[in-house]
Image (cartoon, rainbow, N blue to C red; front, side, top):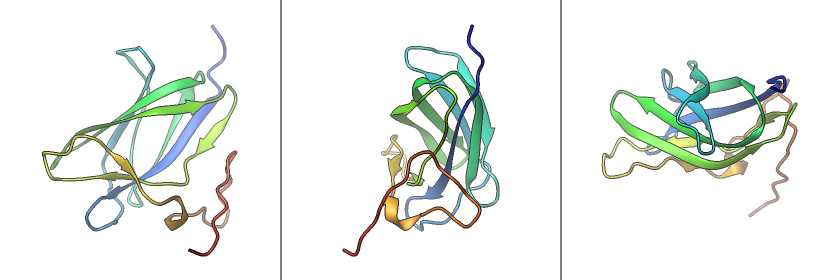
Length: 125
C-alpha cells in the first residue's frame, strides 16, 4: 500500500453569520468507501487539517451539534499533495438543508504564512 502523504486543509463557517465554527468533526471518505480515512475537529477559527490521505476522490462528512450532518463530495487530492481549500465550507443549522456549500473563494483568501498547492486569482467584481 502506498505511503499516505497527502493532506487536505479547510475552514468551516456558519452559513447564516459567516462566522467560524469550532468543534465540527470533519471526516474524509475515499470515494466508494464507508470507512473514514482521516478525521479532525475544527479549531476556534473553524480550521481543520485531514492528514494521512492516500490521494484520490473524497467525500467529507461534517458533524456538529445543532447542525444536520452534511456532506461535500467531488474533492480530489493528488498523491503527496497538501491541498488547502480557499473557499470555506458553510454549514446551515436549518434542518431542511443537508448539504454543505462552499463560500465565495475570494472571501476567505490565504492568510500570511499559509501556503497552498492551488491558488485562486480574484479580481474586482
